[in-house]
Image (cartoon, rainbow, N blue to C red; front, side):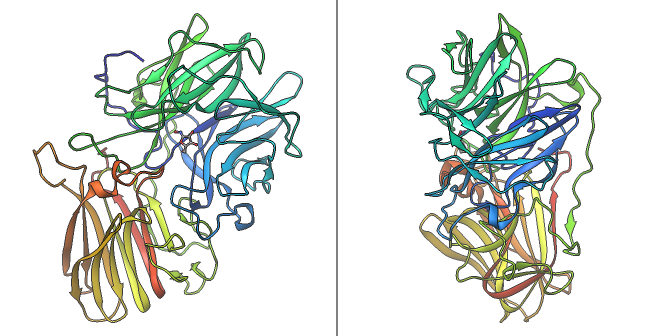
Length: 507
Ligand code: 6LW
């Protein structure tokens, strides 16, 4: 990556919203990609594309409760980290870490990446996070993890065939060598890693050697990708994977964030997946400008239809993009109880609890609006924008007819607005608005405007709250905003949910 950091053209993510740690593989003309999912269920979303730019979610690798153990105290940004997705010997292989104590690294297989995926096989002899899978000519499976260390495994049983051995510690002075991926390309074995931490210092470095276990010689141009210390609109770039297109060209998928507002900038959509072209010089990869705009690709595009704005909850199954926290308990999250409605039943706590009952989707656009029709006759619940259990804004309705806006920022929780209404179904709304302090260097990324519409068509915006407090720079963690429906007490039912970008062509 050159050091001039005015990008030639805007860089758009290929998977906007919280889709970090992308891992990609190709089978014929088809590309498949997996991302981290942390405390959310289903685990590890899987996407398909024909052009590397347009992706459709085809399922999730851990979509049966028995495949995924996330206990009730699973913290925000706990759970599933950093998958590797590969195709080998006629099957898809996925390695991923469940950071829950006692879980560790897991290996799953499928003949169809849309599922069903196998139950996970544990890898007890593989310590650490970010497991990679690579096979050598003899069919030996090498598992490489953050650190960076490596051990051969029997992928059928998950048994380690020896002790893990350090193979490369990355660039001297750089922190957190992680996200390893090992490839055989030409006559070399390449070991690509991320280093510098997943914040502003993030970058990608590479080494090569004669065998899968090295010895590895670092690329003299390391890091081969970083935006650290630059004003590039996409920051924190790293955690990458490589794939070769059928025409022989090479591409990198990677994570990056788009901070906005004043210094230091706040990113609210989490770590998103970007695409960059890769060329080779002297046997080393050279990463081109992030992008590209869809017109710049050397092959025909395969656009996919935009997702529907409305979910009526009429389909027998919830779409895979819907997220709940850690599992999907049927008595608590169901479309079967009142047909055409989503029923959410609280299991003890509200949005402030790690075990909250919610159903949400990633915020994927900097500007969006969402609405839902809620019947709170038997409880209280609402519509929220959630970054984690300690950072969320919600508009909540109760059976008695009160609608209130609740803001939770760190250890502070406050009712920002309250409005008595006649009891009955209400439409709750949230949209992004202009950031506070316009024109001031202290301006934030956006605001979130929460409100209510009554059945006579009256719309009331109840509160406009500073969006920076629902950013990763404030809250920390590895996820991004999720727009969600939730139950706070008792049982609440939702007839429909709308989510739409505020300007379809917008960022
Ligand atoms: C992941 C690590 C990282 O395990 O963040 O950015 C961690 N890279 O490789 C969680 O996503």
